[in-house]
Amino acid sequence: MALSIKNHKYFLIFLIILSSVSRISGEWNATEPPPECTRPIGGCHDRAYALKLKIIAIFAILITSMIGICLPIITRAVPALSPDRKLFVVVKAFASGVILATGYMHVLPDSFDALKSECLPHKPWHKYPFTTLVAMFSAVLTLMVDSFAMSFFKKHYAKEPGTDQQKVVTNDSVELQNHCHGHGGVAAEGFDSTLLRCRVVAQVLELGIIVHSVIIGLSLGASDNPCTIRPLVAALCFHQMFEGMGLGGCILQANYRMKTNAIMVFFFSATTPFGIILGIGLSNVYTDNSPAALIVVGLLDAASAGLLNYMALVDLLAPDFMGAKLQGDLKLQSLCYVAVVLGAGGMSVMAIWA
Image (cartoon, rainbow, N blue to C red; front, top):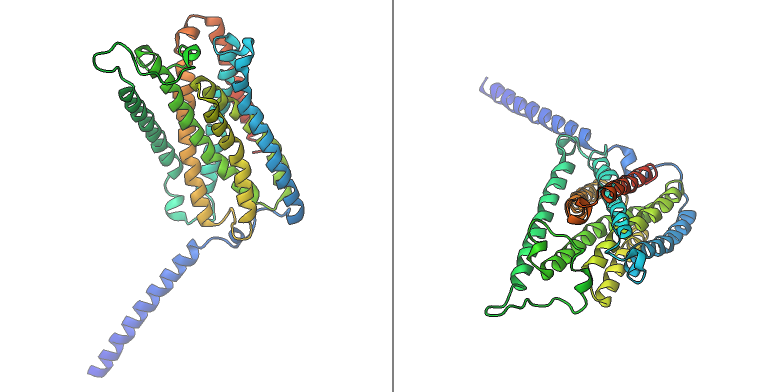
């Protein structure tokens, strides 16, 4: 009898263990990605033809990126487009609208698509809005970098004790000292503060654009689907050109030396082509719908979106529209609003293809 009870006890334990294993196995199978997540997206695949399109894309995007970012910089030699003219303000407003739409219409939806993909486990990715969380804290982190950088530079370039002269940042910055707007009293604190403000804005903005550009290039380079590559290349060329115009305007106002200008132009222009080359090299091991790739791309896109949205609204649009030049000219202010809407609207239309 005791043996029978003991055997029943072991049998009961065995049933409990078996049911637990079955339940865990069922939950595991339920969270496994569907079979299509292990295969490339779409049915139009031609590796050889896709490679030709990607090589064309490398040179096309490189050239259009260089044209876009260099246009504002070379306008210094064109009197009608100098920073103190109204036309420059209108063009800058248009380019700022492009950057604003890039964050809201291109980068943020891509992050939602990646982190809400059916190829990711339902928990936690479908249960919590990680995209907006990361974008929010990315904007706050950008504000922190913005603020701390300005505090550091203002302290570093403060007036020397016992002198009436401020340290000079560069020898050729005088012509732009009144054209780069700061926040609050920054612009009124002196020439050095406004110039340094421009430089912080240009560097932080380029950082956010570069992060997104690498992701775009990587996804394009890893794809073997000509049906999606063809329209994407055309859309990216326009995208990079107009985005480059916005960044180029910031670089112009930062008034760097020629060497620094060349470095910033190179990194912006070469980042997307580099991402394409990297994607081509990793195409055998990288699939853009694998869980690891979706998570990394989704989080980086969310961080880039928060940064771009902050920069467009806080560092590019608000200082200009709240500045003395536009506040004192309602006609010019209205024209700049139209330019912002056209820039943002044009990039929003491009979201149909890219």
